[in-house]
Image (tube, rainbow, N blue to C red; front, side):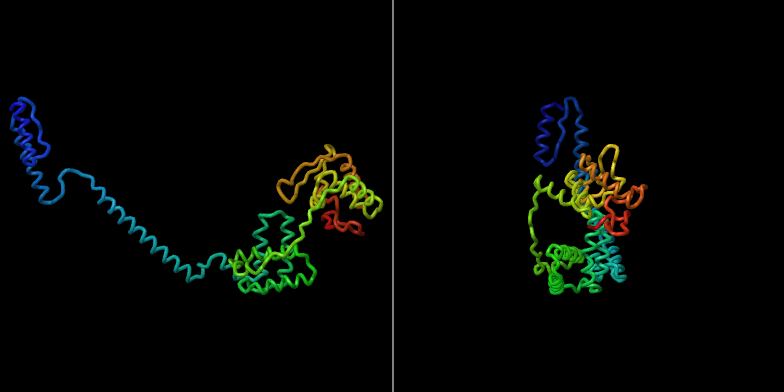
Length: 324
């Protein structure tokens, strides 16, 4: 078959419905073309019978639905198992959230739980402060369940504390502890609109002028019973230490060779620092050591405090810090 005849026959074959008929090369026998046409006819008849192609094909839609059926069945099994677990927990009383369990406590137990949990997040001084401010709450509310605390009871507590001439700042700190406890029990929102902070004084202190510092030191030095105040003032003015830091000073914190001291406990982590001692501060430290030796002997223990408890009385205790 010539090239022209083959091309014409291919065009006519397309008009009759045959798809993709091959174009024969020159000198190619016609028998191959006839077998191809017959093979295509058989394929079409087979497709018409079962409506499925005989050649391999990827049916993505069918595979996706088949996979989704497995996922749905698996999710249903998990949901049923979870439902059975919740039913079993509810029958055993284990389904209540932590806030609901906390709200069943009375005020005394709730305060103890609150202080214990908060101890790991605050400094020791803050723990002692909160424990002290929680005492009136224990005495007033006692064994009353948290769920029964309402705004009327809280306002009555505030009135009683004001009648005792307690400052607004102290009352606000006490109510702050109660507020955090009620928030943990998910009950503060019931009383929040009626409980307001009491106004506090916001006086801004000022630094002493040089002549005022000298006058303070002269007055404190003039009277022997004020020696403790004088030495503490010398340290405060020459080292920038806070009052709480001065009270917590121990002999192990003093370096007599390099003339410095270490603040190991402060209100914040940034407050822990090394402070060099100038001549006035070092002189105050030496006077404190002489006085401690006269009271407790020459063998001063590293853990003893520079300002001992009950100082000025017959039996001061160097193992505890002053509270003045």
